[in-house]
Length: 213
Image (cartoon, rainbow, N blue to C red; front, side, top):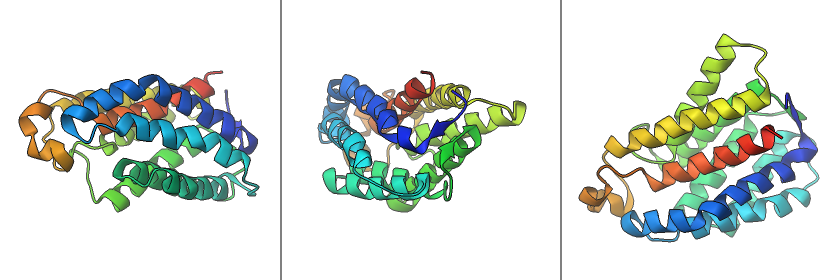
């Protein structure tokens, strides 16, 4: 896939919903050790609602559609992680102002905007062991791929993002948690990947799966 049109957004988020559904139990198990134990259910519910939310919108471009969808998602899952993810969708969408279709460069802009949304809402930085530590290296990897190949397809960008996110998740094993219950029970977190970063990886795997179709 070279580009994705505005009307494909519901199908795109259906792939994300599938990944969150597949990994829901795993995320809950991870979160039970280091958080509240409901992360998988939150991600399943929030992203599971997105395809229908998107089908109900009649906005003129990617930016306004994603911004409004993210806002509606935040009301479906008003938890900490739900808020971070929906903020990422909204701010990532804002970076696509005026665009009717998504290409590799647009995907990079979305990922960078997604990171900005997480930073602003979560007051976090790289290395704090959060979802940002998956999305930010994903954006870095797409930027590198685009620099090496300006004709990068959307499918190639999607795969590059996943590879970057996987490396980011692995790196969280050595990071010291600063937020939530994991910050209190640091010994339990040592050597384990951050559950929020894993959720970020699954989000990008859902995107990749659609772009590869």
